[in-house]
Image 1 (tube, rainbow, N blue to C red):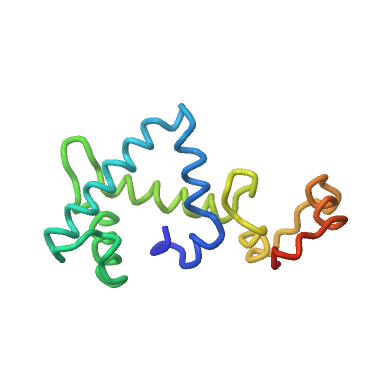
Image 2: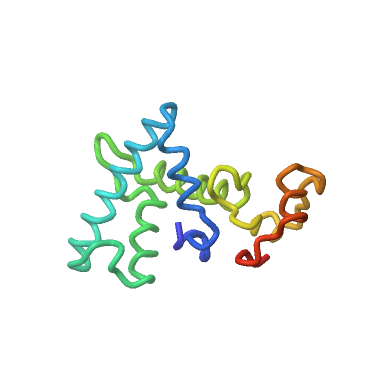
Length: 136
């Protein structure tokens, strides 16, 4: 996700994905992501002799591009479909409601200029009792 949207990890985008993948309706998506992780790691090890997470950013991008272009495909796995879902979940985590784990400190909303309702209970609580550890 960090390769799709730099800063995604900092604002909780992976937590957003984890939240949804723990729910039963997303079990098939969870299986697809598990399979994609195996595919990414296998491809990285064949090409670069190391796990995907240990590859240089440019090498990671090149491997993900192969998924995006549909070059990684097996009987039970479609890399292009996975890549599309990865981008979708990344953007949802960036712009979605923070209660689902992403968009920490409403960073995505601020980025696009969205101002949520000022009188929401959570917002009023933050105004009345600000947490000095959180920086907006």
